[in-house]
Length: 482
Image 1 (tube, rainbow, N blue to C red):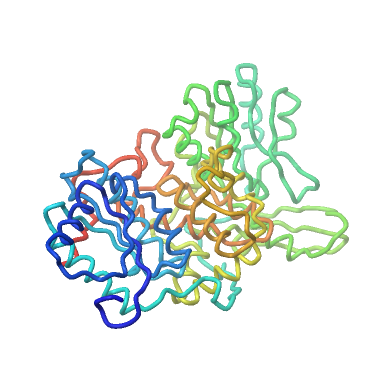
Image 2 (image 1 turned 180 degrees about the vertical axis):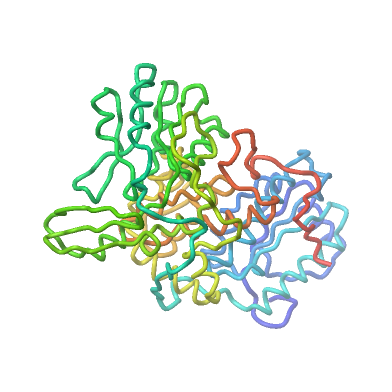
């Protein structure tokens, strides 16, 4: 039974072998009184603690998780805890968007000689968990289905993009095509209201190239499969950021890629558009005007204004023009210099922790585990070794439960921490329209707050924050539990 009042709770502790485990042992040798709620897992270094360890423990019934390692600048492996500090701080800021109280997780530093300090840390954390009580379970939440309010003001004018210099772009591609194995762009799909990727290898293929609000796919997703070949790619602003991120991680080579770009005026949320159109036999016509499109399906016309029907990512897009390009056509679009919160994330921000938990319970009940979100992501390049498929280690089961489905989404989000460019392909590809982009947006917001406004995919020379460290972190406070 815990030395604290009340029933013993389930608390998991990840302790580094060289310092914190030694500190716990020192406290035990000194017969210091400690709560018995903590179950200790010894790890070689705090840098070995993957944030997924913490999430897996919380998803599987732990009431609290404590990570403790060597003091910064005193790591047995020199820099392990510097890397851990960044990862764990981002995790702490990520938990609330899942409906998990961030106070159920803590990380701190205890040396092997600090037995008394260890006693204080474990007692204080255990008392905090007892005050919170047993952790609520995702499966017990009453499902809450809610849709984001898309009536937000965009940072820039949204339109149909029909004034773009498409003919000039086609001419440039034709002139470069003999030097390239392929140029990736968009073409009309099954009808005029749906565009699909186009792979231009011959001059006549260039005639199929289209531009407009139906160009929803991110062509950067195909670039790693062309590694070692000369390839061109036509990009929107958000697509160009994905190209830059691939360059940062050496997944493609700059000398192999030719980037063609035009300013983007926004893309349509085709999930909502198709839902509004309802059941139809065929698209008869698509007519463009300056601010939107009119789609005629089975003789019934319906207009979709870009300001109301754009993808959520488009409202807060600050990079309508490519941040990196070889050949650009058209004037850069003006962008208002003000902060904005994406619609899906704004919806979650307005919820309580209980409502967020209920929201994800409802959304994950709809999830098919088709992994379309993973397959569409341009930065998810380890599909052949994905933990969702691995049985060694066996991170996930194939059970059709909301817990396993949400765990996969958190794995995907955390693997993109500091790397996600916000292209929205994960959410666009979801066949049931789950707003999973909000998880990535929350992590991106945390990264921006911690690392002086860092945004992924802006500069090929930048190092993603979680691939580096600083001895003194400007915006991360030492977790000392005083």
